[in-house]
Image (cartoon, rainbow, N blue to C red; front, side, top):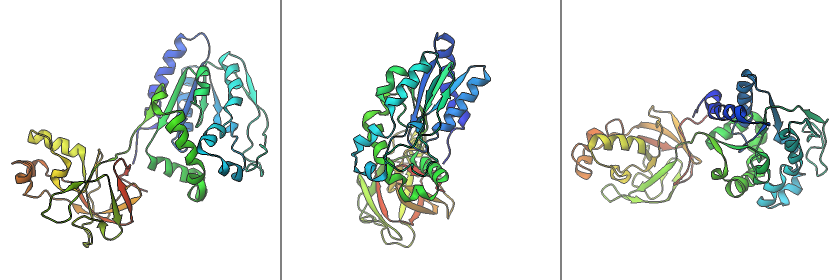
Length: 355
C-alpha cells in the first residue's frame, strides 16, 4: 500500500503557510498532530525544508520532549481519559509557544529518552534546549493539536494514514518492542484523544489518504439460495466464511470485489449494480484487488491469498439485466483462500499489499 510522496503530502500545508506568513505581523504557530507512526516528523521536516528554501525561518518544537507518562505501573493504572490528558505535558508546552509566538526565544528541559531511568515516575531531565524565534513555528507530535493549545496555534493540522502503514512504520522504527507492547500500551490513549478530545472535524487542515474499507458483506448458505447482507462474518483458516456456501471447500473460501469496479460496470450497463447481486462475499470501497495466484491481501486481521480471478457467471444476465456479464468482465473480483482465522466487519480497513 502506498500513498503520496512526502513532498506531495506536504504541499497543501506549505501553500497555506506561505500565504499566512506573507500577511502575518508575528510568527505563525502550527500544531502537527496524528497517531503514532503516521509520519508526522517526516511531514514536518519536509514542510520546514520547503519554507527554508524560500528564505522563511522555521523552528521545530519536538512534542515528545514533553512526555509525562510515568512508569509502566502508573501508566497502566490510569483510565484512557487520564492517559490522553497526561501523556504529553501540554501545560509545559504553553509557555514555549507563548514565547515563540511573541517572537522571542524559548527554552525548556526535555524528557531524557536516553536515560536508564526513563520508565519511572520521576521524570528524567535532559540538557536544556534553546529555541530561536522564527517566522514559522511547528509543534511536531501526537497530542499537539489538543484544544488546550488552540489559542496559541494559528493552524491545527491532522495527519491521517491507513492503519497498515502506521503499523509498518512503527515496526520499522521500534522493532520487536512494537510487537510486544506498543499497541497495548499506547493505543488506548490515542483512541480516546482522537475519538473524543480532538476528532478530525476539529482540525483546520487534514492531510493524508485513506485505505480501502469493507462496504458490504454477503453470504449465501447454499448455491441457489439468496444472499444475505450481514455486518460481520467469521472466517476460518483453510475453510472460509462460516455460514457461506463455499465454507469447507478446498480453495474457494472468499470472493472479493470493488465498489469502484461495480460503479464502472454500472456506467457501462446503464443502471446501478447492487453489491449482493453479483453474489460476491466481500465488497471493498476502492483499490486494485490482487489477481495473481499467490498474492496476498488483508482485511482487518484476516489474511487471504489469491487463487484466481473471479469469472462473471452467465446467470448475471438473468439476475441483474442483459449485458451484466459483459459489463463485469475484468471487474468481477478475485477468489481467495483464507490463511488466517478472524472476523471481517463493515468498515474494516483493507491492505491490498501487506508486507
